[in-house]
Length: 380
Image (cartoon, rainbow, N blue to C red):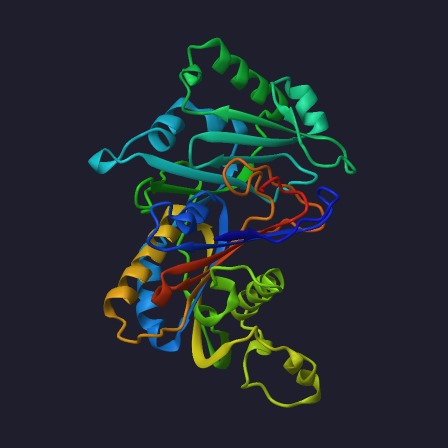
């Protein structure tokens, strides 16, 4: 069963939230598709029963590998044949294909030229109108309202045969990028991963700095946790108030991931907190202590998927509690990424949010998945 919270009548006028309830054992693996189709991940928080903190921290550290920052990359470096051969199209041990994800840093998707590689060999250039007109390459106009001036998107398949340095296409592409950007350098965050496991691989280019995401932990005591296994959200029918309950649960996951005092009973009763204490978690609820574990950086979509699969397998095989606390996941995408899910164009109006949150209910074989994106995002 799935449901989309009603969208506003005026296109691109408000943020969008989608909610889906699916079976964990289904061959369709809807929850996995949501994770693996989202390439530009900036932050991950997982919320678990406090008793599972140590094991969760260990698995998260094992699955989320290092990424790299490079301050001196030129646009022409992204189409360099040796760079493509070594990191974008090459195969590692066991004939496993590489997956490279890259995003220019400090470039804003609404006013700057933004460069990205999406993990599937697609170079995406989201360009200002002036840059696009001078560049002279074939692209398409951004599909969002043009109140801040037109933008254009140019996509290059780095794995195509035409990227051979001897072809006319490659020579013209290189010539135009060099003519427009010259020796202008951009800072990039880059992750190189094994495509089937998300394992971090080595990047050895000039000016590279390795970054290892550190797991940060936080404890939430005395928490009212939504008891989703007994809620209308996972019922076979769709009762009145379903959409509102979905929004409330999504809000609770965000508050818990941020460690907000509003979700706990352990804050003091000072005048400053009285207003916060008026918040109530969506009913029905259960009472327990939680651990929130977070990492930040350029996070591999496949590594996130592998981590969740290991968590599910471990809890399914070792948890003797017949009614375990749900496993919650919340992942934030980069605000200035040119795409959100798949090839869906992403922009920035009042926000650049592209977030997903999952609640895993192992005792009833269900996953409640939320996907939230800003007004200028074509995902639907």
